[in-house]
Structure formats: structure tokens, C-alpha cells
Length: 118
Image 1 (cartoon, rainbow, N blue to C red):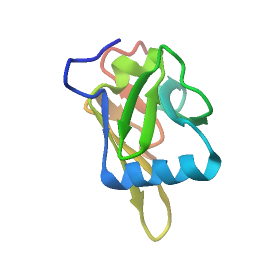
Image 2: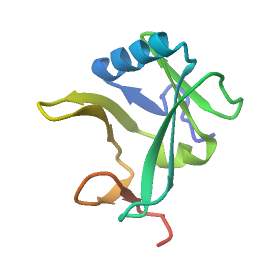
Image 3: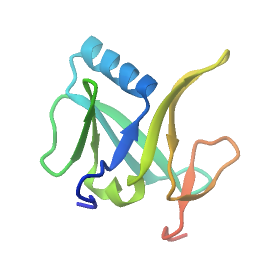
Image 4: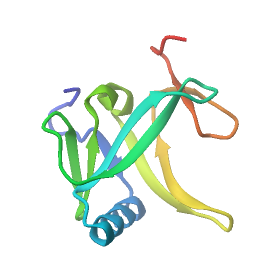
């Protein structure tokens, strides 16, 4: 929907692709669907769900055996995002580096986009 020829909607670091591939293989899933929904103190939150099938309207990005599907309503918000996987002493999880985000809450769980209605 919001693609530019020759450019993927989102990119994954090697660590993110490895983690997504491992989780797909372990759970027997078709991939990871990412999106956004209203919520959190900044207004929007990322969503992530492992899915069994690909919706025909999803934007599909594949890298090194990892597959990410972007929900149709989230494509304009996620275009240009890099997905990473971080591990620290206290936690591990996916991190989104999204150039479309203009603000985030202090805990980092919710985000705000420039064209988002308040």
C-alpha cells in the first residue's frame, strides 16, 4: 500500500531476523504481524502477533528466513522502521527504530506520530 519500488517497508537487523526465525520455527507459525493500536500514555502502541497465515492485504517483508507482515492500517506508520532485538541483563525484546515517531512515553511502551489525532 505505502511501498516505494525497490525499498522494503521495514528492515530487520540480523539479531531480529534470527529471533523471529527461531520463534517461527519453534511455534510453527507463518511469521510475525506487526501493527499499531490506540493506547498508552503517548497515544499509540505497537502490536506483535505470531500468525498462521498471511492476510492478502499485509505488506510482507522476508529476510534470512524471517517473515514480518505489516497490518494494512499500520503500513503508513511503520514505513522506514528498523526492527532490532536487544538483550540486556534485565530484559530482552524487540525494539523499533521508527523515523515516523515524534514522541514517546518515558517507559518507551507507547508512541506518538506527527499526523496522529490527539
